[in-house]
Image (cartoon, rainbow, N blue to C red):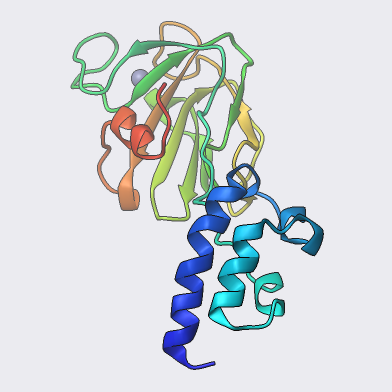
Length: 197
Ligand SMILES: [Zn+2]
């Protein structure tokens, strides 16, 4: 099969296949690929392309971008990025999620732990570097449950909400630092990852 022919076949197959099994894209190739479940339109496309059905059976679906999750459940936002005052001497550099002491904190995405120590006003702070190089800071923790160098996956518990450092009560102070640099508005960053706290 020449290259143009291959490309045309891919174009013809991938879009409808992706649409047809959208609910299964996070898992392994689905049973819908089996001969018995192949829809009529797929047979027609393959027949038109003039290739063997084995090509279709070998088709690997492109997985969707990795799912991201919010760092904590059952929370109330108590301070947004950039708000002045309170315990902060300058503009607020993160987003505050008030939650009960001990509430689990989870990795918002896959990454590596690059920090897990006490950091003054931030209290017990865990830093997760996501695969795109963005650092996520989890501050004021009561406990830390991962160590520097450890790989974490989305949703994995990394610690618990606390009130260590400068706080008026238990909450997560979340910071988002692209490339390990200056903080950006976490709400905007989370929105880009499909998350709306
Ligand atoms: Zn804060």
